[in-house]
Amino acid sequence: MEIAVIIVLVVAFIAWRMMPAKGIQSISTEQLKTILNDRDKVFIDVRTPGEYKGRNIRQFKNIPLGSDFSKLPKDKEIVVICQSGMRSSQACKQLKKLGYQKITNVRGGMSAWRG
Image (tube, rainbow, N blue to C red):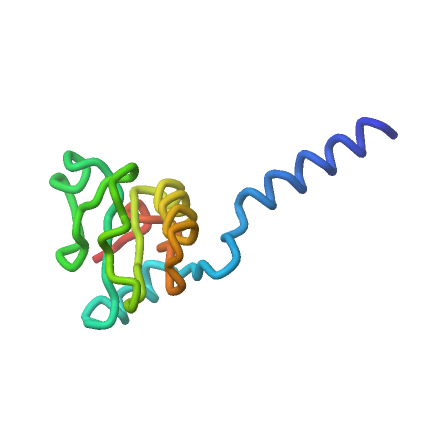
């Protein structure tokens, strides 16, 4: 009985960690294709410069995770991508803490991108 409770708690914790933070939108790479030319959005790639140089989406500016995001415009939607979606999720949470309202994470990141 106790083991079942522990398993449920572990599963619930993992599910909770995977959920996007409140106010952070999540889109697929297919949805990303439809908004790439929207001038009201700022596209940032939070991978390392080496990863970005190897393969990137032209509209995305490379601002590695750990950089100062506070210079980004607060009046535009910020769309964030990384390799798998994990670092971009962290970056989205940092942006939220900095007071950004319109934040979108690209699920699956560059691994899922077929552009």
